[in-house]
Every structure is written in C-alpha cells, then in structure tokens.
Length: 170
Image (cartoon, rainbow, N blue to C red):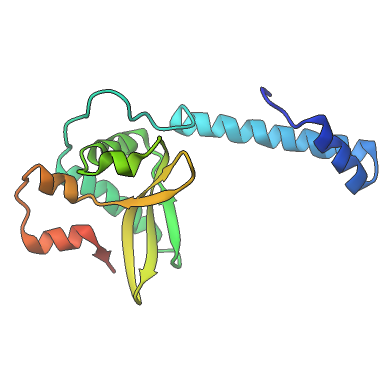
C-alpha cells in the first residue's frame, strides 16, 4: 500500500471499538480495501484522470458514438431513475472523449480534467431523459451533447433527429 491510513485514525478506532486488536483488524481491512479500489481504478482507466491532452482527435462517425450511448441507455432501462452507468470500456471512452473534445464548449465541459464519463437517466419536468455526463477532477458534474460537435462540424443531420439526439426520451 502506497499511502495507508495514519496513526491518528488508528488511535480513534482503538478508542471507538474498545481495544488495539480490533482497531488493527479494522485498519488492516480498510488498507486492503483501499489498495483493492486503487488497483481496480487503474485496471479500468489506467490512471485517476482520463487523458484529454494532445491534439484534438478527429470526430468519430455519429453512428458509432450513438451506438455507444444506446448501449449504456439500454442498461439503464432496468433501473429506476435517477440512475447512471459509467462508461468503462476503453474503446467507448476513447470515442466519447473524441466527441467531447470536438464539442464547441469543450474547455468549459472538461475544466481541469475528467475522472469519468457516464450516462444518466433522470426525470426532468415529469419526463424521463437520458444524457451523457462528465465528472471533473473537482467532482463537479456537467452534461454534454453528442449532437453539438456534429452540428458545429456541419454534419448533415435532419432536424427531427437532432432533437432526438439532444434529449433522448423514453
């Protein structure tokens, strides 16, 4: 374990639980879970933040980005809103990051960095909506449109489809 729990925490646990043996057991368990969680994060993403540096990638095909969104939206149909599904597959993350980096307000959406991308199902004005979201390094969350980067790149999309992409209703 790189950075484990400190001695002050151990003393507090000893006082709360009522004995040094119990505190050591709890601290050992906490350190193990902490290390496991860190390892899982590295396995899924390879680092604590998603890489948004370098030149802006080319915009992927709309059908590809939309299929990723639909796949995650399908997983949400079995859950009660509000609910969310994190995009974990590296290829899917790469495509959605490319869409996000081509967004007209990408710098505003990305902020100081991104920790994860996810699709959320929620209820707004008594309507169920499904949108893409970014969780930033500062833990704030902001939505982003899959459609706007394509619109700003002058991809010809019929008006009836643009509204459906913007706010996907159930």
